[in-house]
Image 1 (cartoon, rainbow, N blue to C red):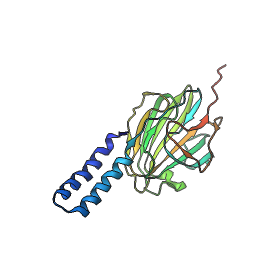
Image 2: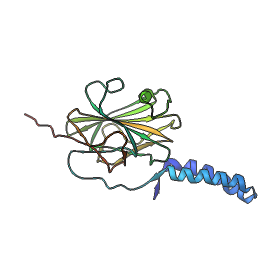
Image 3: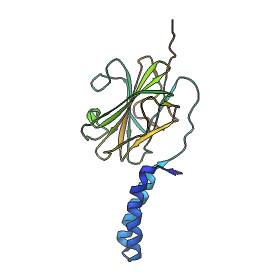
Amino acid sequence: MNIDKAGVPFIAGALAPALGLALARRYGWAGAFAAAGGFFTYFFRDPERHVPSDPGLVVSPADGRVMIAGPTDGRWAPPGDWKQITIFLSPLDVHINRTPVEGRITKLEYRPGKFLPAYKEDASGNELNEIWIDHAGQTIVVRQIVGVLARRIVCRVAEGQSLRRGERIGLMKFGSRMDVFLPTSADLTVKVGEHVTAGETVLARLEPLHHA
């Protein structure tokens, strides 16, 4: 299994002291640092995913549990009318983020904010990074939102970049949340409480636009 490069400093920072302490025969501390290294290796794992190819599908951008699936109440959504899917990522979930649709990035917006627990509804006021994607004339918005433990967002895409569905776009470190805003015509296929897998679980289906 691949390990994301963002994890290298954490893993090395734990395993190097573990080795030194083991050589010094301080096995208790060595074991603690080795366990931390094992956790970081697990956290930054980057498994391959089998992305469905059927047209019009919206796949999950993250592993985690669905917190919201339905019309947004407008308090935290971008301007306009949307359907919203919110996913909470625990520290045990894979944290690699993927684009839910193919398309071109039209806007990136980073906003500083609070560090409330990511599972709280008002965590939409937390520090976040917003990615706007034009998918065949329809706009999809993806938000990377940090929580109490996750205090750094890694975004590896740029404005104007074209993406394939399920392509890696970044990650959030140590427990976080992702919001996906879809057109109101989207047919949602997940429910609150379901566990979803990035790049594989279908969140919704989009109807193609019909131009006059």
